[in-house]
Image: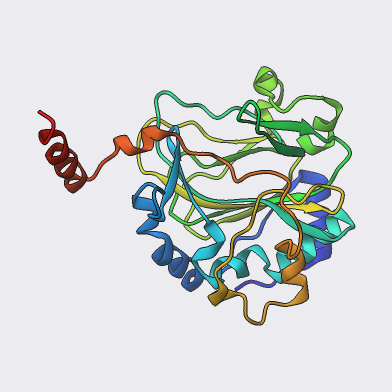
Length: 287
C-alpha cells in the first residue's frame, strides 16, 4: 500500500478536481472482493437468490456492502475518509455506493454529468428524482476491480470550478468546449483508484466491443446532504467497527432514498441452460 500526504492531495483536488490514489488498496484485498462477489455477479437478484440487478448494459451487485469486511474497509479507508473530510471541511457519510459491471454496448452512451445532487425516490410515480446542489463539496471514488482496456472513466479536468454555475446535471451540449480537458483512464489495471470532486463533469467512455469493466463506486457527502441509500450489513462483519466507520456507514440513521437501480423483470430473460430446461418442462404441463 502507498502512503499519501493529505495536504498535497487537497492541492491537486482544488486545481484539477481529481487525484489518483492507485495503490491505496492492495491487490490481495481486491482479489478477495472479486472472489466473494463473483458468483452473485453471474445471476439475477430474485426470490431470495442473491445476485445482480440489471439496468441496460450494466449489472449492479445487490446488497453490495454485505459481502465482506473487505468491502467495508475500502469504503471507510482512513486515508480516503481523512481526505474527504478535509476537502468537505465537515464530517462525511456514504450516501451512494455500487459494485457494478459495464458491458460494451452499441445502444448505450453515458452522458457527461455531475453528481453534486440529492437523490430521492418518488413512490407515486416510481422514479428517482435528482436535485442539483451547486454550493456543496464532496468526493466520489471509483476503483477498478478488473483490468480496463476501454470504457474507462473520463473526467473533465478543472470543470469543478465552473460546473456549479449551471443548474443542470447533463453537459453533453458542451463537449466541444471542454474536449481538450478530458482525461481518460483506459489501459489501466485493477486497483486503479480515482477520487474526484462530485461537481467534476465525468462519464464512462462509451465503447462497443471488448471486455466488461467491473468497478467499485462510492459517494462521500458532507452532513448537509441527506443520508442517502439504505446500507445493509452482515452481522459477521460489524464486530469492532470504529466510531468513525459507523459514522461513515450511517449507523442509527434513516435512509432518505432507495437503492439504485430498481431492477426490471427483463433480467429473467437471461436464463441459464438449466433454467430454460425447467421453464420448458413447466410449459409442457399446460400444452
